[in-house]
Image (cartoon, rainbow, N blue to C red; front, side, top):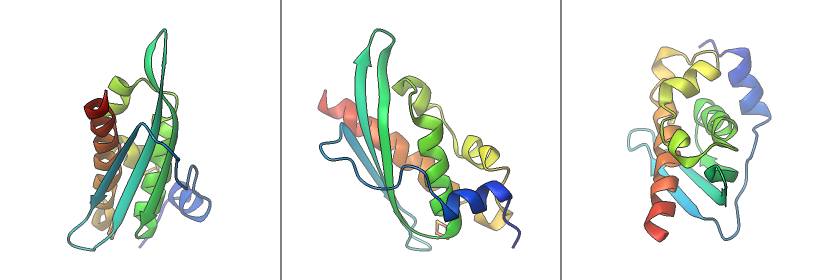
Length: 126
Ligand code: FES
């Protein structure tokens, strides 16, 4: 299987890995087929341009693609208003990683779902 340079970079040195204490929202999703799990924590800050994802971290138990997509989605979402972060799709993540091997495309589902769940969790609390 051929991974892109970007996937390998994010897999070997993931960005924003860890947890946020007292997060504004948390999203956790699992892939029932492979058993991989992804958890995304967000800290939302309000400023004059709206509600911004000020900090974001992930914990993932999963394959190389699951780790790389987690890392990439945190980069894509950080600093964005939550409405824009809600629009990030699995294809945006795969494209930013310069593609995923076709049989690994499903791994990117976890990343956008976990982010969207974290935002929904935040909205439930306000
Ligand atoms: S094989 Fe499970 S998310 Fe990649």
